[in-house]
Image (tube, rainbow, N blue to C red; front, side):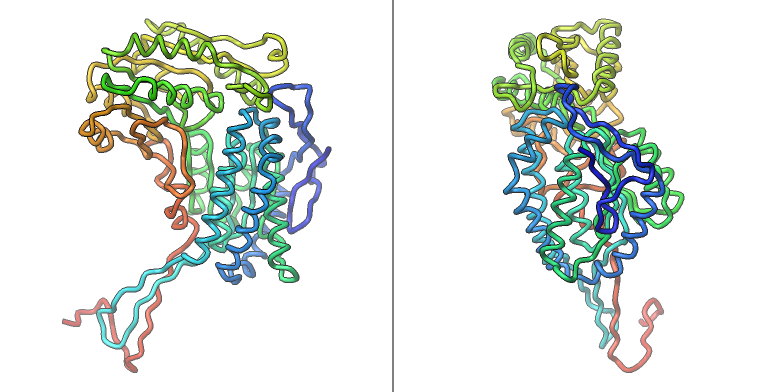
Length: 501
């Protein structure tokens, strides 16, 4: 089946008339569909449509815009299992995880819907008599949204829903590897707009342009009529986007890489810590920016915990994520699997690091049809090794030994990233020291490094991003401008910023 772009309220073919195959990573014989290989001309049309739509959309009352997102949430809820099944088929992670991905979109829709009634301004007293000072939030304009393949529902909703409720219009480029989930989401948004607005429907508020990042993403980033960019992906691409978009002073939000660590102290609940690292390191086949890619173990429990971990990891069941009793799905593509294997070979070659388990393709039986990789653990890893410093984005865990909490925190902080972090301890003083001293946007105490909640800020420090946050109340600052308003009813010219004393 061929799918098309949504531009100005119409589903249209790409100007190139070329399409890209989308296949199941667990079974490359399973063709999901053909999706547009769009060009800069398609981006131009989408941006022009969004620019025209903005002048009408910004005037729709924010609570009414929220009503649309409430209906989007209802539709996602009613189709949750169907969407999750197709997402697993497209992206690979197990059904329980894709259901969670859809639920994140539902939660974000309902949260954003309620924010339509809470886009509060701030008032302040004037320094002059008979004068009133007010402030309001106003939309920024046309947004360009570039999203990754690992959370093909949740991450787009984190961006699109707040942008829309704030009154912005959208040009959305999803990842080439997960276009169908994006198509379904945009279809639901457009349907909901038509149902709520009726004859007042505004075409061009949401535009979907499929295609390659090097073509469509570049065109969006450099387009003169786009006012803001929101991107989630690699740090290297984020730097490129920041450079290009910065030339025209676009507002840019970047959510980039991570090299997250879980610390396990000698007083920790080891069974709980074990469950957490299994989930953190091998959930989504390690393909999360928040994945646990480093495990820092106190020397007193190091050997015991590593033995427990190895035994559990070797029992993990690989397979197609829509089948029952599967723990770990495939990597998303052949390229991704090859990149993971490249890092495993680097780890084997690095001085002293020892491969404990995994480290090879999984190709038994039906696994040979997909891009499966055995969950992998290295021990005797030094903090400065490449497998402990660089984002692998796969089911590879580097285990590092430590002798104290201070040393563990120093190791955790010792990368160029700072997204998520985790500490397992039953010592409340150590827990609060860790919260204070860890350099990361997210810290879990006695929890895994993965598991964001839609109503909390999400993002990191250092090369994980550029300071903005997604999720929660903080994201609404990115999608609005502040307008200060002064109302003088004194009947005379009063001058602020002049010495009135």
